[in-house]
Length: 310
Ligand code: VAH
Image: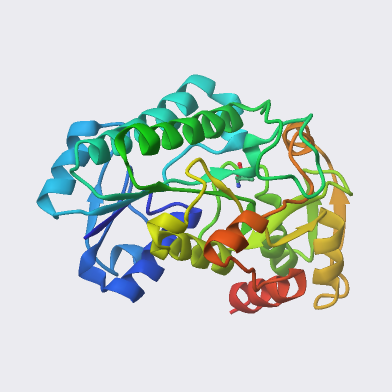
């Protein structure tokens, strides 16, 4: 069976649905620190689970005969700046718990998400390479960079089959994101439909690597399905789809809601966004496991407005 830790989060919710579709609901155990949406809770087995509690995770793994774990629980970039030590504790100890379960052969395969947040202010901003200077300036980015080092270490030292991608900002409609700097790209669609206006917390021209959730879920399943030998990178793969600033989403929305109005009031999250790349070179993911994105900004806007507008 498969265990998803952090199943109620922005990625976890959709990942759980996709994996239940693929493997059958009863083979996919969802877990989180709190209950999730009705559709998630009614779609298959659920366990309340603290990702930092090794013994509790071990109990669930033994009880359900779990073979694979997707560790989707983390404190994201904006919230992590407010609670650095809680973020470090959650983001790192949850990873150590899963890597150690794999080292003890209690599970056989791990997915762990990294992020473009591993890059810092002096990383090349355009077409950021897979291997480059990485001096993250956020707590979240430091935890993801450190997590990547540990994943590679456990693969090399103990043969742990852990796989990872550096997600860009993710846009989705099924679940609201929690505490990210790229959350503006989700909020804007909700506000466009509710109020026909949005005050953006990032400045015009803040170009960031972004991706529609359907692409992110497909990439996650694809790297987990890949033959182990083809994965040359065991820290985390760059993953890209599109890059744009808030003004480009606003223009794309105006094609559908002509009187939509956008205004800008940058807050503390601007400094976080400014430390990240503008676009990502994900050629290694394409070479090693045939990654190819399908959603551009126009398709994303259509999907978001159609589904939120129902
Ligand atoms: C965040 N959505 O904003 C996450 C992600 C690249 C952004 O890591 O913190």
